[in-house]
Amino acid sequence: MTTATPTPPSDPRAAAYAASVRLSVAPMMDWTDVHCRQFHRLLAPGARLYTEMVHARAVIHGDRSRLLALTPEQAPLALQLGGSEPADLAEATRIAAAHGFDEVNLNCGCPSDRVQAGRFGACLMREPALVADCVAAMAAASDVPVTVKCRLGVDEDDDYDVFAAFVDGAVAAGASMIVVHARNAWLQGLSPKENRDVPPLRYDWAHRLKRERPGLPVVVNGGIASLDATLAHLRHVDGVMLGRAAYHDPYLLHAIDATLRGAPLRPRGELLRALRPYAEASMAEGAALKHIVRHVLGLFHGQPGGRAFRQVLSEGAHRPGADWGLVEEALAVTEVRARDRSAA
Ligand SMILES: Cc1cc2nc3c(=O)[nH]c(=O)nc-3n(C[C@H](O)[C@H](O)[C@H](O)COP(=O)(O)O)c2cc1C
Image (cartoon, rainbow, N blue to C red; front, side):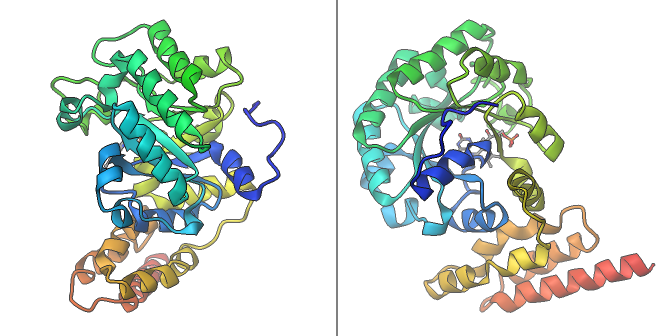
């Protein structure tokens, strides 16, 4: 598959960013916070990570130390912005670039009522000229790449050419990559959760987009939940973005990243223990263990002892004074259960 960057950039950070197009973890509100991303980075050194969506005005006026929290290891890291006011998006992009993000992504896919009322997210798919203005303002604001994450359309939209024209408008305005959540968003009658499952997936639109625009980096997203599916998509597009599967089954994320990098698989316990220095440093600064370990509960998904692992952590992490010892306890219990199971 051709990518947009045939010769790798000589700057190592730019080279890592370019390579990370192949695999990314989706922006997910309440899930892909700074702690989650630290864990995902350990699992997937080659993947591009995305923040939760942050509104441009929150970036400008809000508590940046919280909203834009990151660590240097989390690069390549994109900030996802919500909004539809070009001047605000430009200012937020400038702030994000100065903060150390490698990419700024515009959300054109969120269907929630709150987001619709604010005239951003998925309803922007019906306003291609406004999206182009937003992207142009963002791209002019800094050197950081500006990308767009969109759906195929909204409600009953069913015209590939309209979708392609939306993409072309964003690209002409300066978007350097398109992430396609390959289904429509239904703005009436479905919750955001249903909007991630009910509208049918049409991967062929994303594949066709790439086929017809070979120079445009295209990433496909939606319902991709295995290594085989990832590899199959990579024959058609530049990258695959995993959301729920990566979150609920973090070892799958590890396995896909390792396969793409040709690296050996590391055991689950070793990966988790690599989080300890970060977890302890965060707790020393006031974070609670429960806010960190909630993201690791799925690490033994589908494995003997996986339920015990989840139970020890979710019950114990809420107790006052819970520390890393609880994680060691969960690992030990999991090992014993797994051994009992294989001996039975
Ligand atoms: C809990 C949750 C929160 C989400 N928040 C965002 C968000 O902030 N921005 C966004 O573009 N998409 C958001 N999404 C959608 C995902 O990025 C992704 O497009 C969707 O889940 C489909 O991919 P998947 O089937 O791999 O999960 C969210 C999804 C979930 C499950």
